[in-house]
Amino acid sequence: MSEYTLSDFTESLRSVGFDESKLVAVVRSWGRSPEGYASWEGGFVLKLCDGRYAYLSGWCDTTGWGCQDGAELRFADSLEGLGLPDDVAWDYFPADLNRWINRGCPDPDMV
Image 1 (tube, one colour):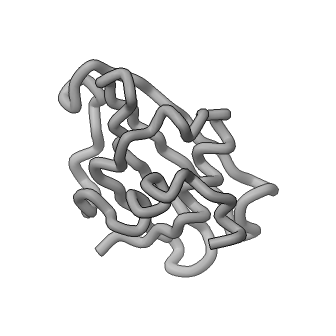
Image 2 (cartoon, rainbow, N blue to C red):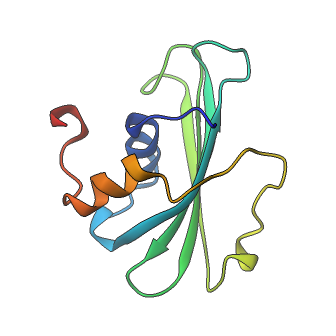
């Protein structure tokens, strides 16, 4: 089981300035804490309204989101075109993230 939260997902989206209304689903996700406590790194495979896919990856240091952090987003017409990492533990169709999308992407602090 990977380690990530809704906050890791939404902060990664915010970091790249992505419009949540373009999301259909999170196809798979992964996350881990390299030191085993407060730092985080992970990624999310997104299905978009226009039929494309995107790979959103993010990280934050032990101070959390808002201090030392970053994210990257790349697009492709297929999953194969994303160049996904193969050395991570993927969660397929993560229910919590897809529930958030289906609810209209509400403010994560309000859920």
